[in-house]
Amino acid sequence: MPETLKILCPCCETLLVVDPASGAILREERKKHREHASLDDALGVVKAQKREAEEKLRRAMDENRHRDEILEKKFEEARKKAAETDEPPPRPFDGD
Image (cartoon, rainbow, N blue to C red):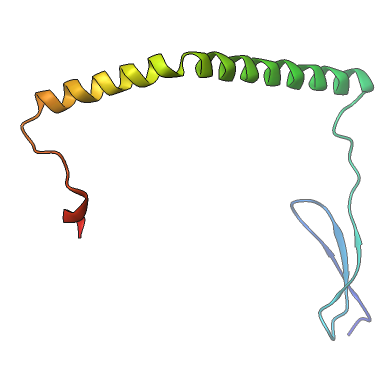
């Protein structure tokens, strides 16, 4: 039996050196890969993330400003739906 076992992970290509007697991982060598081909690509990704974050913030602020109107519209829709149905409203204590 060999002193150590060398196992290559099929998904991340990490090389694991394992002690066969104890099963402990003695060494781990991760394959180094670059996420971006160049600094310009990385800068483009950062700028895109910044634009997306600003857009999300703008939408959240708009939604917060119009929150009362939105809640009022939801309430009116629920009232209309309740008026159209013949079923009594659910009673929370009858759920058991």
